[in-house]
Structure formats: structure tokens, C-alpha cells
Image 1 (cartoon, rainbow, N blue to C red):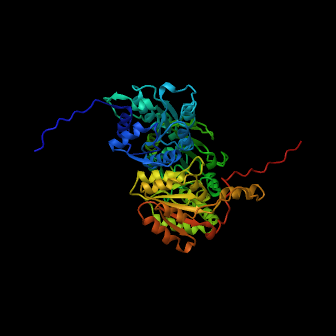
Image 2: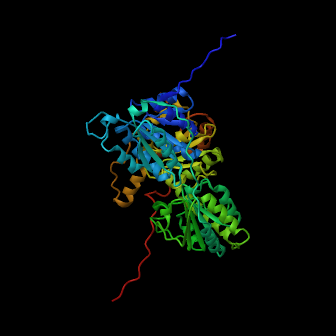
Image 3: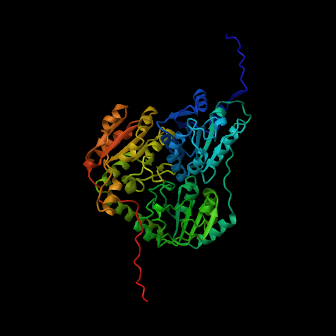
Length: 563
């Protein structure tokens, strides 16, 4: 028998450990960052406690993008740590992307000792007015100002990040506060995040208006990713659906009632003219998805959004209902049951519009139509689909390859290249058993190419489809279309990716002919862990239609004016 040992638990710890323990209560299981002298007390506690997987990125931008990708596919909180000053600045682009996407993300950055703060002493790692910089790239930014308020500040940051409309929140924590001793708090619970309420009278007013519609269409954005059940009820009543890129998969894209994200195609715009109502839900109606706000949407147009400032933004709406999309749509469906009469030809016309749009896009793909078909057959339905900004995504990744789940699609919505691969690593670590497929171009991949090593180190279950045309393809096409074919500064000298991947242990396959494309894709898909499928676009050939930037609305000819 072992002698009885009396375990004496200390009632004190560091602020760093309190923050680590609090994140555990927020159901954080994976966090990302770059370790530094100015965040070490928190990361030391995370490592010692062993309850949160810490992923060491090669750069702060990569860490924030990974946290963003994890949060988008999981619906949970993304967490990333950076140091202060230059390191916090390195995360700025990724924070802007998370802000654009409305990702619930917590960015914890260090700060220099409180006694030297805000004195312009050129103290190492100091950035003048860092808090203002963070506020400009975050939904909100906080500074922990005392040991006693550290937990309360971080708890409030998490609440704000999750509260609709959600977004990334930054917290500065000076290093002396992180390391300070503190009594264990009695309450480490996660914050209470309240669901927005709404005015039921306005929902009834909306129901009365939609009762008169015979061909009603829903435009679904990212704010409906949690509302599939309510959307399904309206689809069952006969509503058609079109989505933003962020709203893909709320209705499975093989469902006959959805146009998918073919939202700006001419055939779809013509179909809009036959609709007698559109209800926009949880979407910003972004400029590049509305032909810079000139896309002719159906009228009357109604809107539901968690952001009260969305009322009449971009497009005028007849009625606006502020609140949570799930609860509002659920109540709306209840009020409409048995009270709508849909035009019998509506569903068939919607299917026809999508078929025309799909066929037209396929014509422009040239040989890559075969690649897309092979990819879809291999990956099936259960996968995450993460895309960087590249010609291939703009032509087929954003629309043609189907998405079947509300959180399965992730795209760099802010338009910055070089973020997709890192977001794919985060997505893969959120769902290790599910394959994450990532579409990137060679230009975008090289922006943060070092994070491929992170993927290998963490054994992320991601298949990277690298479309390699050895240049900034879309810029080249714009130069051809708008600058007299003067191709300047677009050619890219690239490594031999097979040798490059071999140097750090990443499996690599190259497609030089589409005759073996499906076989090679299958090999990559069936491998657990990171793998790169490089498509040699120089060998495969060009798209049938050159993509030269987002489509724009052609101006209607004006009638001549006479004196």
C-alpha cells in the first residue's frame, strides 16, 4: 500500500494560467500562434496544462488565418496568439479577412510592461498607439489594464466576438500582467452570449407581404449558416434560393430549389426578372457579387439581418427585420404555412436558369471542366472546400464544385491572395477525420509558403490543389484586356514543387495531362495527412475564356437627348 499523500492545492496562480483555464471553459481545443517573450506566460500555461493543442505557425499572419479557418468550419471560437509591435502588425491582413468574413476570433497579443507603456521610449517590441491599430482591424479591441480585470476583459472580448454580427476581437495583455500572481477566480465560466430578439409584429408584416408572392426567392448569406432547419421549411413551402459565396451549402448545392452561388450570371439575372419578391437574409450583398450594386435584383426586396445598419445598405428594401436569422425565419415559416400559393412553373424555371448558367461557365473552362468533374467524383460530398484568390477559384471554385454543408465552404472573402492555404490548415485541424481540400494558385501559395511545413508538422489532413501557371494569371489577363497586352511584373520564378515538398516530407503529385487526373486526385484524397496535387497549367493548357477580374454591369445605351 502506498502511504496516503495529502495534496495541497495552491490558491494562487498566474494571470497567464487563468486565461488558459478560461479558454478551456470556452471549449477551445486548438489555438495558434508564434511564441514570443511577450506571450510566453500564457503559452507556458497552455503547454503545462495540456488541454489545448497549440499549433506553432511560421508567421503571425498564418496563425490568424489558421484560427479563422478553424472557426469558420467549426462554428466555435478561433484563438491566435501574437507578440506585440511588429508581430501584432504582421497579423493585420489576416484580421481584416476575419473581419470581412465575420469570424468569431480572439486575437491575444502581448504588450510591453505597463510602466513603459505609451511613453514613446522606443522600447523593444513597442508600437506607438498599437491599440488604435488593432481597433481599426478588429470588431473591437481591448487592453488589460490591471491584474484584477484581466479575466473580465478577456471574457468580454469573447462575448463580443460571438455576439451577432460576429467578428474578430483583439486583446492586449502587458507582459507583467500576464506573469503576475493572482488568486484563482471563483468563476471561470464562458460568457453568456445572448441571441438577438426581434419584433414579431414586423415578422407578421413580412409574412403578409410574402403571402402575395407567387415566385419568391431567398438570397442567403453567411449569416444563415446556423439556420438550415428554418431555411428548409421555407424551401418546402416553395421558395427558391440563391446564395452568396459565404452562404454556400446552407441548402445542399445539388438540391433542385437552389441556384447555388450563380448569383451574377446573365441567365440568373434574367430569371430574377420573373421573381416577384426577394428576401435577403444575413448577406452584405457585396460589391463583387452584385456587379458593384448594379445587379438587377427582384422587387420588392426585403431583408433580415443581425446588423441593424444593414437596413437599405447597398440596395433599398421595402421592409427590414432586425434579429437572428434562425429565429426570424422559423417564425416566418410558421406564419406562412398553408398561406402561400407558388406558381407551378417557378421550380422548373429556376432549374433551367441554373442549367444555363452551369453550362455557360463550363464552356469557359476549356480543359479544366474535365479536372473539375474528376475532382467532384473523387471527393464526393463530405469535405471542406477552402479556396484562395486565384483564377481557378473565380471561374469554378466559387460556384461549380458543389458544397453540401453550411460550414464546409471557406474563401478569402476580402480578396487578398495567400490566405487560403493557412485557412485550410485550420479547417483540417478542426475536423481531422474529414478531408479538407484547398484550391490555391502558385502566386498565392508563395506568399506564406512556410506554413506548408506547419501542415506537415501538425499532420493536417489537407489536400492542396495547386494551380501552377507560373504567373499572376488574373493580372496578366487584365493587362491583356485593359493595358494593351503590356505584361509587366507578372511572371513568377517558382521552385520545383516536387523537390520542395520532398525537402520537408510532404507528399507531392503532379498532373501534366488530364488523362491521369482522376487517378492522381484519388491517390491524394485517399492519403491521410497533407498532400499536394500540382496541376501544371502550362502543360494542360489555357481556359477557353480568359478571366480578367470580377464581372461588371454593362451600361444600357442611353437615349439621345434633343434640345
